Image (cartoon, one colour):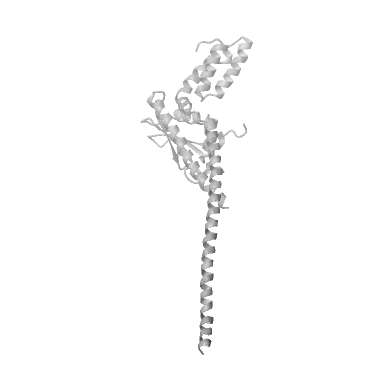
Length: 137
Length: 129
């Protein structure tokens, strides 16, 4: 009887013990997989971040190369009109009877009209007009 | 999928910082010009709501207007507004930068009065060049 009871006890107890062991191993495997996945995820994110950082650096380089001249824009807003008006009068093609100078005046006049709101370009054209058309501005 | 979303989020933050940087540099040079007496009025750039009908494919969700306010103490004449607007529109690099950063409208107006001008940036990008 005692042996039978012991057998029953073992039968009843063994599955529970077995289940406990399985639970322990499951927990271990879960932690291992979780840590592996987290390492992989971290590696993926760092890789992506490095790639994006490179992209941003390239963009920044492009920005430096193509810097907008705000000083010229603001100066042009208030000073280009006056210079344009004087150049328009002084470099008008009808003022030049000489064929060579007339051609040059036509070219300059077109450039002046094109860069009407760009002070830097107008200043350059003014110097060109003084040198090539031999006029006083 | 995840990387796309990640890129969108990063681009949004980056564009936002670039927009602020551009506005700050414009305001910096405008104030310098005013202090040096090169400019008779103080210009100030800021973001505005923008014009809905001027939208293009790169337009941002919010604040698509690049507004320039001139502090003159009196209403600006149409000629003055046109000069300020045209001097900005004549810079092709700036226009392209504005379009890429999500702006679609350029607005110029004074500090007094309701009168101002609006331009559609897309028309001045000179895409054929």
